[in-house]
Image (tube, rainbow, N blue to C red; front, side, top):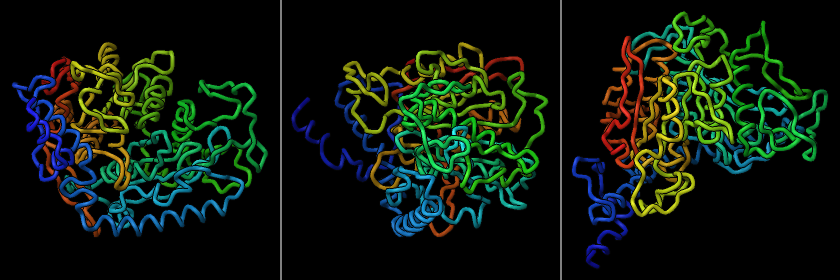
Length: 499
């Protein structure tokens, strides 16, 4: 490569994507790995992986964002501090509780509960007595669907959202809870033990104070894999996220007549039941997509939460469908996961950091050298291939320039593409409409146009229209397998990447 050409490719504007607005899309004449055109396209993709921060309408280019962030960060931090002071025997030694603004999410969504839906903060204990905090989201009274204008008529299916690891907190996932609630779902988002504003330690039954013995053998139970005799400690273990998911499901389904048990809750202020229990659809599905899975309930998880819900769908009969946000998993530790219910996986090109094409080997989370370029089947192999082989409905999309942080609302500093969240939300809405409401068939799921309502400040939600395929990866294959009446629709390479 001529030196002048190399210098042109490595200029700051090229790396940062300044002035670039058109998406870099795949074509039949894709450049060869290592060629100048390939490197230039890759640099643009790297720059676009920071689009949520500097892209058109992004955090730094929306004048409403920073003032809202300052206001909401202060309000959220003070509220969490007061909550912790009121519960001194329930310490949450977490980044979400100690770092100002950590749990603020998207500050432009602050008015949602006053204008577009309802929400209520809740507290309940997991099976080990640790106090978990969360939010239940529900449609507004006599609400209309903001996309179609149709009256939303309950009861509504239920959804549990389990956060990601490395101190992911529920505020980062408010966007999805709100988006689903205003389309006609009752959604519980929460913090697992040791993250966000949830308690760090377990409580033995009958004790006001936290206690555990980390040197003891792990407790036996239906969720295996606890690392120590101190359940949920450390928080960074899959068992913690599986426990959270299954106990959150129990709380979502609770009513005043059948209250949640709240084990080990002595001295804590807890809720006995889901505050929107009357809105939850408890009717048995007479046409379940999976025999024996006739509740209208979905579980959604991100990161280690995605691994957890991939496992929970196999063993918890309350789950009718699963959504995994980076990544749908076919293994759990040394064990294989059994695909049981329809699964949607939204996968990412990059992990926590953005790396060039030469480091696309391994996985997005642990990149390795890859001189031949990315393996197109990399993302399919994590889970979709197993669902496909099992003959279970499944879909996997890889948004272009997406990172592992695509699914979390984090201000200013960590990479995410500009439109991955919009593409993800609309796809999840369509998926749950089909598998929980029996509304819309494969054609609706495969619709190439994406229409999304995005908060832009001052209580305003602005329409966004995208062409789906322009915003899918040109490195990694997206795929689907869907039963349609008497035939199966299948495409293992939706945008002809090369699988």
